[in-house]
Image (cartoon, rainbow, N blue to C red; front, side, top):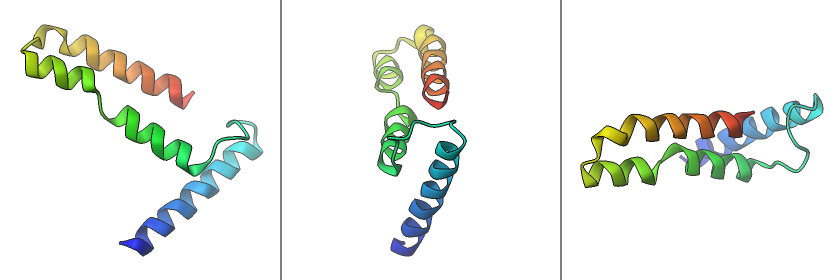
Length: 75
């Protein structure tokens, strides 16, 4: 598993460097930044909280907001 993690980090680093080389990504972005973004944006405490509280009427709105935030981060 450790070898797979190393390969994943190396692949992510290559993608980041290529994106930076063409000006598509800020120069100060590192692999850890991308990993943290994925971790933070991959889960939605709001969606989980609404589900626990039974507010199913708000789930679509919350999911849409999460998708928008992911799109903003990707841009």
